[in-house]
Every structure is written in C-alpha cells, then in structure tokens.
Amino acid sequence: MQLAHIFLLAGAVAAAQCNTICIDNYEPVCGSDSQTYNNPCRLQAAACTQNQTISIIATGECDQKCEKGCPRIYNPVCGSDGTTFANDCLLSVATCRNASITLASNGTCQEAPKSQCKTACNKIYQPVCGSNGQTYGNDCDLKNAKCEDPTLTKVSDGECKGKTNSTLSPSTTKSNEIKSPSTTKSNEIKSPTTDAPKTPTTTSAKSAGMTVATSLAAIFSATAYSLLG
Image (cartoon, rainbow, N blue to C red):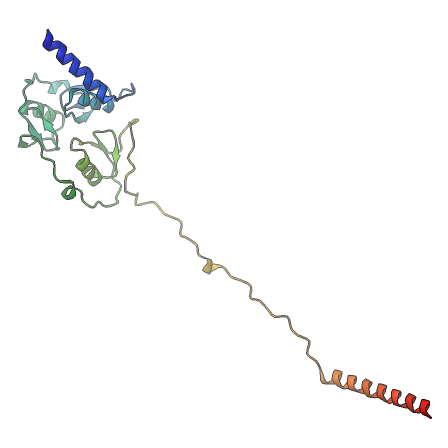
C-alpha cells in the first residue's frame, strides 16, 4: 500500500512540474508506446508526466491490427527514424503502422554532436509535418530541428493539418514568389535649369547717350556765356 502511495505521489509531482495545458481538439495521433492520443499536445504531456520518450509514429488512431501485448520491460532499441523504443516488440508495432521504420541498432539512439549534426539546406519548399505538430520547409529543415530535439520524427509529407500548438516559420521560400524590383532615382528625369537671356547693350544705344550728353553740355555753355556777357 505504501509503495502505491509513493508512485501516486511521484506522478503528481511530475504532472505539476510539466504544467502542460492542452486544448481539447481531436486530432488523434499514434504514439511510439502504442497508445492513441487526442492530439500531439496530449502526447507530449503524457511523455513529460511519465518521464518517457514518446514520439508520434503515425497520424490518426493507432491501427488495431498492429496492436500487441508487448511486455513492459526495458530493453531499448533504436529505430531508423531516430526514436528509441523500450523494446523490440514496440518497434515491431511501429513498423506495422509505418513500414519505413526499421531497426537501426540495439540500445538507445545516440545523439550526434550539434556542431556535426546541422547541415546547410536549400530553399526549395517541400513541406513535411513533424511529430511535434509543426510544419518544416523540407526534410533537411526537419533533420536540423531534430538536432535540437532527438525525439522529433517525420509524420507525413505536406503541411501539418489542423491547428498546431506553435508554428515554425520555415527558412525556405517558394520558388514561384516574385519580388518587385527596387526603383532608383536614376530613372528620374530632371528639367535642365536654363539661364535667362541677358539683354545685350548695343553700340547704337551707347552712341545716343553720348549725343545727348554733348547737346546738354553745349546748352549749359551757351547759357553761361550769355549770363557773363
């Protein structure tokens, strides 16, 4: 009885530490523990509460024809999708649901160093859906994300359907996008500044001025002479 209370207390503590809040939308996924979960968030919450690695191996409910009474023993094996299964029986169940998952090695899957894990990806948009409910630009982007989260697996080709808990913006762009070219001021045509023509001083005008001055001088001289006389 005391042992049962200890397990219940441990489960309550784990649930409190996880503190995961999930919405109740029904987007069933099949976990690597052969259990069907209402949505990816419920699966992640169960993995946290049970302190286990549970990955999505298929969208939709677990196929009943693949169900087996697997023993609850821990003899880990690594699947080709990078998921560690508690034993080979659970791996065979996963293979039944997704034929692309095969045995990679005995023991847990080894995590590669992050510096050696990530690779340069192209920008071709060929979306794939990850087991965390997020859409990635292509297989390469998902592989790089897996370096940060070794439990991440590919669920299907194409974008994830329905609502997801979070959205990753892919670092890829669609090849058919066309951007408007930037315009430069070099195309602008400015009106040239023209200088106003100046009115030239003609020789005839100068001559007329001199004639007037001479006439005035003669008049002043005659007047002065008559006054003196």
